[in-house]
Image 1 (cartoon, rainbow, N blue to C red):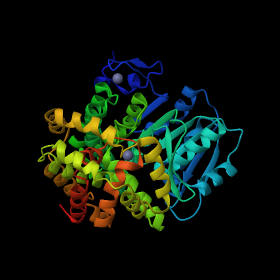
Image 2: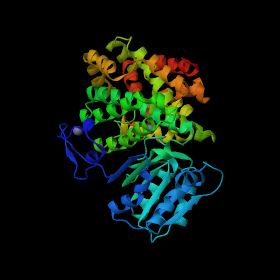
Image 3: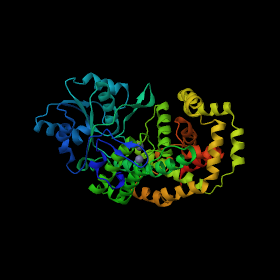
Length: 457
Ligand SMILES: [Zn+2]
Ligand SMILES: [Zn+2]
């Protein structure tokens, strides 16, 4: 068995997969991963590793300047013919929607045999959709270590003005040149760290869910994430000085988050309640036609918020009678009204998914979970002790680095914070800290706490 936390990148992406003590055979579709100074020079090598000869290069105006120009120069020097598409218009304002994918599709040269995305979140997401539709592999040339979607097998898109995840394929190759990435806007570097801090909550909730719901868990994959997170936090102070070591740690951590999700075949290793705060805030902004902060920035805020909630939760002693009474008092109609207030026009699909798939409000399922929670509460508390950092120390670090810490730092209101908290439990069938709190009968108390934490800690 391979110890993921001790393995190098080459070993981790071995295409033949790896048998693991968890009983699963882990594998990742990623075939080429190069991170470091000058990594962009490896673009021809990446194509060669995939057996491809003609990439369709996609950038926006910013990323063309940051790396696209250089990529095309490197391809030309290696006599590799390629297509090129640069999203026109106001810098950095490409939305991952039908319009963007339509523009790409109309420009796509079908004689190309791969798509090379030069950029970060939006460019990669759109390119994965295009590559999937065209039936060719995609290659990600990252320009900022700002989010953990580089190696994921889905694209976070906007369809019909609603945020959706489209499942396609993980890029076949990822190149993260730290010389390029360290020149990215500071907000994007800090966003990447915010997305890594999320892993504290993600791993903690994954272990708790194993106890409460019996969900699959792999300690080896969790260990890989812990190692990456530790490296990021240890070098975090160097990020504001744009040190290669710190930028490389975040870039690697984000790429390995995708690898870990592929290994586990679920998003558990990389995302927990903090990501759901982010998803909810993005959905709310979209509904109102407003802009959102970067995904990773929101995840950092969501992490600080979740840690505060868990700090309160640790002071509680589960009381089954209290929890049972709360479930008995559950009022379906009042809940639906609340959902409509939070979700607006997406409320119907959320409500029907809860009733037909997730069954989050089902009393029989609650009965099973609450019994396990009460019985194994000491174990749940020790998982929190083992996995989570001291909240004040972490928020202190975030403040020192100039990161956003509270929802109000992002202009998010107390009402949207409590709404996001309540909505988090039902937008997907995933057992989160907010699910645990609902099971214990404390939802209203913690929704109020979330609202008060929105303003400051
Ligand atoms: Zn495993
Ligand atoms: Zn993320």
